Length: 167
Length: 457
Image (tube, chains in turn purple, cyan):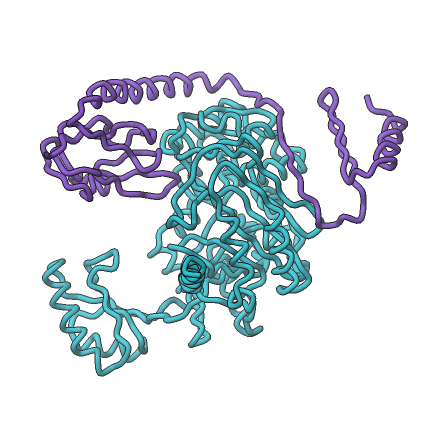
């Protein structure tokens, strides 16, 4: 418990220093003392470090999340091994995000396995922070595998599709 | 009635903003979070946290069942939806009603009335609000009649079309015949329907909106805002009041907004958006937003009110605490939206982790944010990091304060639009004020030619 005497001591510490601001953290209590007169010229680097108090009701959501993650990781795991072949080029997203195979829901996919592509052919879309960006094939060749399903999440290093490079 | 426990069904800065007012009002808080937001600032600020689903918003913040279940399971008696996500979703409001949770927002009937563009327009017309003049035509003779009424320039659109297809701009009467024949033939070929819709074209328009507050019986306005600085219909900078607006126009705008809200017997906070035609000095109703808006702080700065507190009060069933005479607008307020985007790379989004963050504090500056050192910027949600808000005794003073405040902002680890805003508030046209919705494109072109000149030198 902080007493008025403690506060007076803190003010004395600030007064005897050249500091503009002074913060004391102890046992869940935080006191900030600031000199008057620097009106409007303060910059604060503040942090809320309190741990969230998560209620039990979230158990069900946890299981859903775990199942979703499993699906994505199995998909990416399978592709990295086959992506090592030299004549096969993995198409990776420009940014991490959600991968879409078609320009809009219900529309035909941009490409299917067996499609011939040029380097600038659009093979899919990525949604990152509600913004869409096109995914280009990057090389000329033939799509031999589609590794990530529609509306699945992909990291920048994820192989979305594999292209057999045209020699 | 007074709420005991509020579920905040949103994320980011607005969640932190709503939590702040709940705390001030003595309402216990439960923050709904996705798996990606468990360690976010709102989660740390709230009394309790409920995880409602995985990161992608379709499975969490946009999942009506997950949100309502979280409210019921946590014993909340009210739900604040923030903006975006499910904030204007009638299904959520209905589900809340079924489970005895008060939805902080307008009634289901009002959400449905203003949620649909055509129905909103009908209500606006019924309340006597002007809409963009236009009409349908099946024959060239009809079209000439409509064009006479609408005036030039005008737009000819295919009735069966959409997304700008088959749209033609006509600047003078002598061009109408030729364009009309072309448009009708194209419409017939493309959609099997030759009918066209003719609408007045606003060459230079400003986006001006009026904040309203109602208790289901009385309605007041809380002044206007100008949100004309936009990129691809996304607002970047807002201010209150709208600058360089004649008194008669301003009072007509405010009267129109309260007329619509009155007609709807509106209960809650709402915004009526207008397009102001600079050349004609006329305004037209665009839409009504039945929620708290991103830019509400500029209204709070000039009116001295806490809009979330007023919103909660009417949701609790209390009559309006204020009359129109209690509302006065003092000085000028500005807001910059700082986004996690690389504005020099076509505004490419920049998710990641913020390594360091520091914001200005002071008497005339306010920063609404959920960003601190080590905060995650997940790829699933919009890119808003912080809103920097200042209040000055006039617009010039506020612009100077904003320039100063932006210089004192520091966000590291992700690309941000901070530097873009620093340049924006130094722009001559911007400093003059009253810009139209095409301004931002002109401003960006000027910036590009500036950087080209630097490279050349």
